[in-house]
Every structure is written in C-alpha cells, then in structure tokens.
Amino acid sequence: MTAPRSVRPVALAVLGVVVPLVSYEILVALARASGAATLMMGAVAGSSSHALLTMILALAFRLYTVVALPGVVVYWAVSSTWTWAWRRRTTRR
Amino acid sequence: MTERGRLWLGRLVALVLAVACVARLPAAFCARRAAGFFAGDVGDQRALGRGARDWLDQDPTTLAFHTGAPRFDGEWYLIIHMAASLAFAQTALQHAELRPEHEPLAARAIDRMLLPAGRAHDRAAWGEDPLESLDRDDQGHLAFLGYANLALSMHRRLDPASRFAALNDAITTALARRFAASPSTLLESYPGETYPADNAAALASIVVHDRACGDEHPVTARVLAALRERFTDAHSGLLYQRVDSTTGEPRDRPRASGTAMAAFLLGYAGDDLARPWWDALARQWETVLGFGGAREYARGEAGAGDVDSGPVLMGIGVSATAFGIASARRFGDRERYGSAFASAWLFGLPVESGGALRFTAGGPLGDVLLFAVLTAGAGR
Image (cartoon, rainbow over all chains, first blue to last red; front, side, top):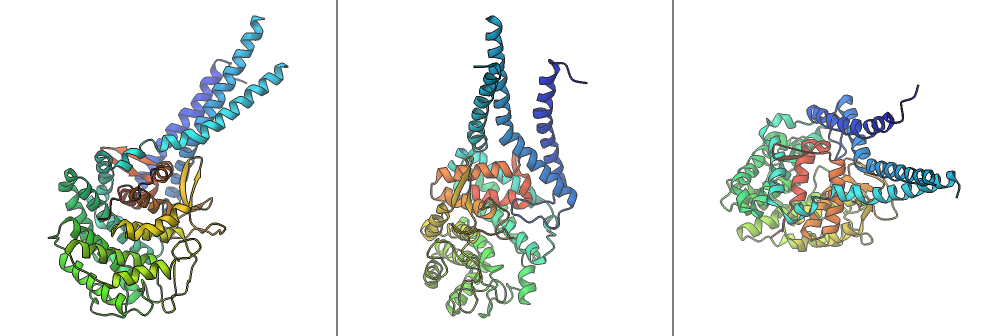
C-alpha cells in the first residue's frame, strides 16, 4: 500500500522536519529534568544510563536538525523544482 | 539530453547546493549571537548570569557529583564555584548595572566554595586541611589553594573591602612563601603530582591580589619565567600537562587543555602574562564546517580524551576549546571566538527561558564555565 502523491510530501515533511524538531525539544526537556549527565566536559560517570541515552539522543537530533536538515531541505527543494520545471517544459512542447 | 540525464543533472545540482548549504549555514546559524557576547552585551551577560544563578539558589548538596571518583567530585565542586565567582565578579566589573545583583552572587559562590565539600578532595589526598596548614611550607595543596585564592583575589579586585580579605592575604602569603621555597619552582597539587596549569592558577591569584591591594611578591616573576621557559614545550608552545615534582621533567605531553586553562586563569592577571599560551593555542585552532576548536595534542600527535580534556572529537578537545573562548575574547580574536561559540551553541544544547540561558549538555559545569569564558574580560 502506498500513500497518494499529494500526501507524500506532507508525510515526508512531518517525518523529516516536524518529528525531529519536536523530539529534540522533548529530549532536551527530559535531559534537563534528569539533570545528571554532564557531557560537555566529558565526565559522564555517575549519570544513569537513562539520562545518558536521553542526552545522546538529544545531541543526535540536534546535529540532524541544525547541521543535516538544512542540506536535506535544500536538496529536496532544488531537485523537486528542477524535476517540476523540466516536466513542465516537456509537457508544453 | 535524455530524461534520465536531466534527472541526474538536477540531483547533482541539488547535491552541490545542499553541501554548500551544510558547509556554511549551520555554523552561521549557531554563531549568529556571538557578536553580542563578544561585545559584552549586558542582556546576554545577564541571561548567562541567571542561568548560573539557578545553581547557586539550590542547596549545595544538589551539586554533589557522583563521578565514581571522590577526587573528581571535589574538583568539580570547587571549579564550578570558582568559575561562578569569577564570572559574577568580571561581569560586575564590566557593567555597573549588573554590580548590585552580581557582586553578592560572587560572594555567595565563594561562601559555598569554602564549605568543606570544596576542599574535601585536597584534604583526603594530603591528610590535612589546606586552610589549616597555611603555616607549613612542604605541601603545595594546589588542588584547592590556587583556584580558591584566585576567586578571593578577584573579589578583592571587585571590592577592596572584601570580607574575604584576611583569608585572601593569608593564602597569598603562604603560596608566595611556598613558591620561594620550592626547589623545582612549582608546587604540588597532590602528593607527588605537579601540574603547571594548577601553578598558573596560584600565580594568577597572587598577581591579582597584589594588583588589588598594592602589594608585591617578587617570586611571581620567577614562577612565570619557569612556566614559560622550562615547563612549556619549545616546539608547540603548549604547557606540559604534568611534570615530575622533584626533577621538573615532563610526565605527560604538552597539551591544549592545560594550556587553555592556564591562559584563561593568567588572563585575570593581565593579557601580557597569558599571551604566549594564547598564541600557542591559536595555532592549535581548527574549523570543521565553520565550527571551531583547539586540537588537544600538538600537531602531528594523536591521543585520547581524559578527565582534563573532555571528549576529543576529530582531534579537537572540548575543554581546550571552552577555555580558549575566554582568551579569544580577551585578545580580540573575533573569528576564533565566533567559531568556538558556534561549537558551544551546537553541542551545548542551549535553552532560554525566563530570561536565563542554560546549556543542557554541560549541566551546572556547562552553565557556569560558559558563563565565565564567554564573558571573560580584561585582566587589569
């Protein structure tokens, strides 16, 4: 079963943009609440595995949303526009 | 061109633009507020101060760390309160409007630093309390005395009538006397353990004390010369991380974390004292996609991270980078300050709420240390 064409971009945007952004905010709130892990200076001993996992996931989502996501969005926007423009040109001919 | 060829050409163009975007945009986004912090914006400093204040408002036992090593627990407790006191004092000196709020907070951080928890690690190692043995000359106690005295000296600079003046005088006198009596010039932090960066803290504390109250301890020139000439690697310009207590021979490699901390602490005594180590640290600087930091080990060398360096990622040390921010600001290096700020903003997981700025990834250590290094001001 596949999603209709009109639904696919919305689903991709939700999965690729909204879910990571919301997940990051939730994980940071959880990390602050747990308050144990201190990753910045490298000493994590003493932190619970739960708090540590939360912090690592938050960092992963941070890297994705800040570093990777702009590239993903640019790639998607340019390639989509390119494809749309060529198809439109071909159809007009 | 075929349909398939046009499709792949489009993908190639998109990929090139995406890579160009990733190479520039994330770092620019993370560094977008660096200029304000670099310029010493009072609103930014107040926000950092509120983030750090949250920890001082809590019961001191909240900051009882459990790293698994009592020594590190004690060191962290001490460093957090020393850094908080330095940060509140330097921002009070920079902005008169912050002084009514930040001066009492600097004193509160010192009060907490002087609680038994702040020197338990030192007392456990030496078998005697560092403050109750100031009349002895055969023990350095630099795991506590240098850092604590720097906070006291900065408070003296902020308030010449500081209620900590008597203790500041007593520790300064003891440190100067011990330096003068030391055959190797340096003092031990723990029995059999000598760290040049800890000695830099003690040296800075004496110089700041002397400037604040018009005193003079000539031994400081001898210690500074020894740190520069004997305990600094001639090739890299970095301080040796650890040296032999008796012979002064290196017991660890020259490293950026100790060098950056020494430059940060000596910067309180004056830019001229910190300059050689900042120059060396600046040569260690690297950027990856615009995110900057200092290499932990000298160029051509590799090594793992430890409790001093923090994580070492692609050769860049977290601790060296964090302390390097302070020197970058003091020496007017906007570019390195901005690139390290971007790294801190990316990996620190910053959160702003209620007028306070906090860094989730660092907990209290991150909040307080970044407050201290981001706002590090002129030494005089």
